[in-house]
Length: 414
View 1 (cartoon, rainbow, N blue to C red):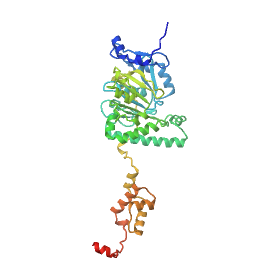
View 2: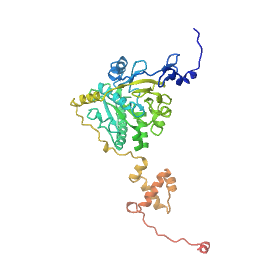
View 3: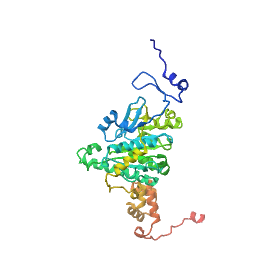
View 4: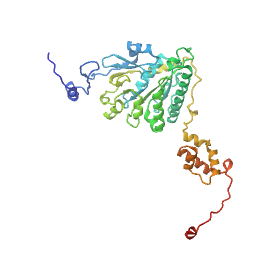
């Protein structure tokens, strides 16, 4: 048998001709197949099938992942029928995108239920944000929730602030205990004293970005960069993977991504940095990009019905677990910047400004900048506050103003 060398580009350019020859709505060419010197052609089946989450959980691949980590999740099955499981601690954050009706919410439900099946409230806690008010509210009543499902954008922003503060508090505890991460901190702890994992689930990121773009992007990026060691993980979903929602900073900090069927190649490139998601079939058909490999995997996502979710919520709700540590995010204040702190209270350099004003006839912002060795913005703020409140404790004794002698030239101008 003779072999002929051929360029891969010549095969990939024939995708439409191959779909016509195979009478398929669309095909996906994987060139080359990882680990093999062959080109794979994925042809969709004529009948659609669903992948039950129980079948994935009972597989050997998931059991091996579950033995290593508490927060293992069952994603679905690959093109060859093999079960695909992932470790949320190694991801460590997940970004999900896809058009309406492609399976994003079912993917979120299966991930949450997979964690609920294997963890108690002492092991995993959830913060859920559902701006659409109808998707994640089914989980209300779980003892795993840090607060009831958040449906308002302003409260969701406050939850992000609280999560940021919680991350800093956990790092302080790790520093006192001499632990590098949450696994080392919980290693020698009693069952009731261990620190739980915190999972933030956001069903629609675009709504939050419209409410407070700068703060949401900054907080999400800081959590994605630093929160991995503290056991805080983010699962963010959006149906509009445009550059103003999934920004470059967010993409850089979410290496693990899942894309369901999207409407155009532009959306596919935004979420996966490559084309292919626009050819997916919907109903849970997805492309999965791991943080360990840039090669995409095509999966059929695991399916869980509403009745099964209700049974899981009913089971945990009847365990008699009462949690009094619910967080009230309404008490979370807005973050104060340096300018806000200076504007909210008297500047400690104000007394020196008054002293300089008593010694010199004229002071200005540049004068304060030179004498006090501060920046121009702070000097300007000091000058403004000094001019606005010249009475009271900051009052300057009035000086006797003596007229300056005028010269002949000045008299002529007058």
